Image 1 (cartoon, helix red, strand yellow):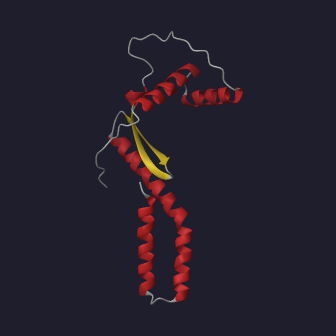
Image 2 (tube, one colour; image 1 turned 30 degrees about the vertical axis):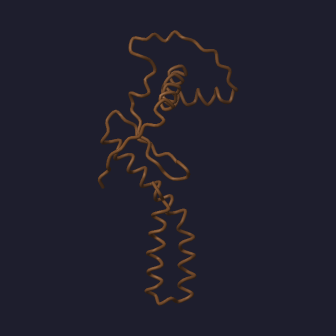
Image 3 (cartoon, rainbow, N blue to C red; image 1 turned 90 degrees about the horizontal axis):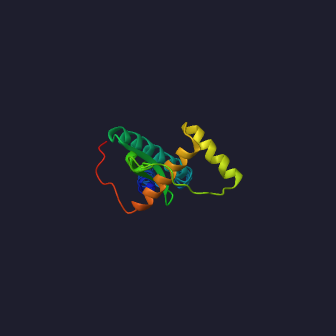
Length: 149
């Protein structure tokens, strides 16, 4: 989602109103001040609209999660399949082990995140690592389509 396009349209609309006002220098100064002040608000509005779009798309795509992420400073919708976060192949046992040394602060963060999801640390780690590994494998895949408003 390109917020610069929205900002350009807003600038054009305000400049149009300045022209209608007769080119008064005080009006032009006020218009510049308004544009400067509205920049962050326009970016926040774009993010809010992206969050609403994500919620609506997620409601229409069962079995998928739709998240809003910042990519190069711009809000972007990320669609991922719930099935993509599988922890193992059906019937596969969970008996492989890895010893992992972590800083105590990271261990606490992991325990807190697992508790917030209502999962064991092991289950949370397996799901998180599986999702991350799956996303790495699918990095170049794109979801295409249209969104009707």
